[in-house]
Length: 192
Image (cartoon, rainbow, N blue to C red; front, top):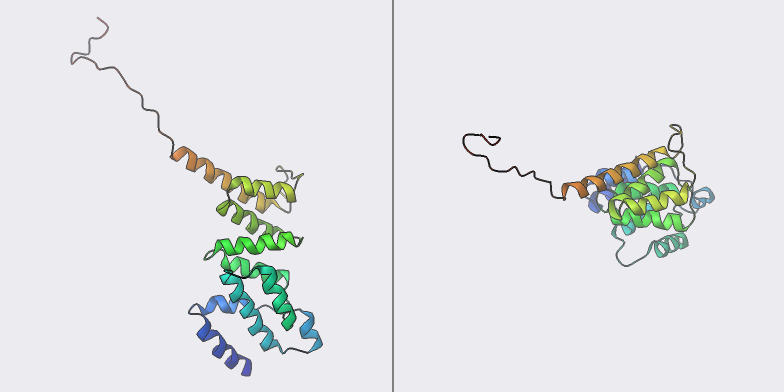
């Protein structure tokens, strides 16, 4: 009961969209700090909300700096936290979401099929279909597009989607060819 009251005190002033904050902070935590008992679970949730807020803004600080600073405080952010936050930021701040994924890729984190799908989707949306293809080929160089059971098939389908969008945007901007017919007389006796 006390944690619910604490949650209401913290979450209400932070955001008018309380659902987003609840989703960002409701998964169980598995950091080393909690198992040692040095930080209470409620405090960890609050600290992770602060990390999410910093990642949400990403104006001055880099992700490396934010993560290192929080680890010094005893708040450990794992890959699932980063993925969840990137997913939340996708619709409102897709650039920040893409930066989180790039940071995760730079740290050699292995993506699950759904994480790879979201990353390819963001690359296609923000950087174009070619950038998404280049990354997909780097991750999955021997992808068999005929294998319906391939683990990264959802990412491949997103890639196809972005190429279709690119093709449609190119064809919609092109001029249509207009056929011009010669003028005919009113009597339509052209062949006489």
